[in-house]
Amino acid sequence: GLGQGVGLTPPCRSHPAPPGQGWACRAVLGEGHQRTVRRVAWSPCGSYLASASFDATTCIWKRQEDGFECVTTLEGHENEVKSVAWAPSGNLLATCSRDKSVWVWEVDEEEEYECVSVLNSHTQDVKHVVWHPTQELLASASYDDTVKLYQEEEDDWVCCATLEGHESTVWSVAFDCSGEHLASCSDDRTVRIWRCYRPGNQEGVSCSGTDPTWKCICNLSGYHTRTIYDVSWCHLTGALATACGDDAIRVFEESPSSAPQQPSFSLAAHDSPGWVGTLHCSASVLRTSVEAEPSLKKRPRVSFSRHMSLMARAVLPVSFLE
Amino acid sequence: GPGGGAPLENANPLIYRRSGERPVTAREEDDELPDSIDDREIFDILPGGEGRAGPGRDEGGWPGAGATGVGQLRSAFLNPAHLIRSINDPEHPLTLEELNVVEQVRVKVNDAESTVSVEFTPTIPHCSMATLIGLSIKVKLIRSLPERFKLDVHITPGTHASEHAVNKQLADKERVAAALENSHLLEVVNQCLSARS
Image (cartoon, rainbow over the protein chains, first blue to last red):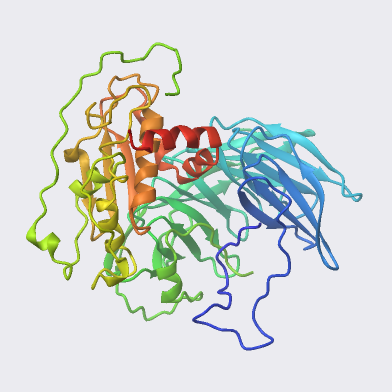
């Protein structure tokens, strides 16, 4: 069947839903895949659901009156598909796999899917793909410790940037609401923020030709004690949430005194029992020291119940409500 | 083993003596006191046919054990199938302890922080079975320990030509999970973990 990400707490034994309210399971799509289903993604229009599986296929499901129908199965990857993502335009889909490749698919009005590019830039397993919020720019995160960006140039999809810096597998990436910044999280226990500098930028960052340059402008290290599996950037508030193998969810917010070239982030919420600490945010030059206490005066925008924290063994996907 | 008729990589491995049975302390005998998990316990957990015989325990009856299974671990210790020292080497009719691939001194347990670290030493620096051995150790620990434990299985530094690559795979829980969905690989791992008759 389909996996469920962490998002809203469904009714359960300790939080029973009043009759007529709450969540109900409307469909179980059990026949689509032969192995673990790793990722699901709704199309921007909401009528389609894509599911990526370890069985090397990606299924596209169409919402019907009485459930969902598998309208097509995308094949081609050699082994486990790890992620699938729809471009905001709704015409493009990207998938990635342990076979080291990223595939871009086009869908037309007749619901026909066609692979328009197979991108073999990564040298290892590709964990995640994410689209830019407004442009047809694709980002991928890989076991080869890099993030790569792709766009269409002269009718061909090419890798237009490689973001190096992480010291181990990059598990996930997230763009901010403008798409000018990207956050990446890694097995190296850091979150890095990257900023896009365009040709002719006033900061004097050199660019090659017409391609922008991406530079790492902030490195959040020392907060996470194990692999960071997911990062999500809230497009409303700018807050960053992370999912970590140390069983904690952390929310970071940019400090009011933050400078655009060297932003500093502080830990706004950290839901884990018994947390007390002094935190240091490390940016490229600036060093900010933040004293944190368990009872924060400023309540985080997203509230996490202690129950949820205790339930989580390791937090995998995390997403903000739009 | 999986080698079939092919020549063994390490035809004359050094064989080490097995350590004796673990002496039981008075505290451990007392059912009212929770047992903490220590490195000898993990060492004993790597699979095989050793271990003390004894009646199974009722985990629910352990005061102070909580939901996170100190009682489960106690039961695992008593279960002869759960000893890491007795994991079979994939190629030789010997255990990992006998080959000195695993040693108690290289097992680090922090019960309070729920972490277990196991360093293992392949018999030769180019051993192609290193990943499989590491995976067997990891699977044994996953199956034996309470869920709260975070596991780190890696090669003793300086003892293998590809230790970074092997360690990275073992640390990637998605890769481990996907690999174990492969029935052939799972069968080989289960053979390493089965008790020798």
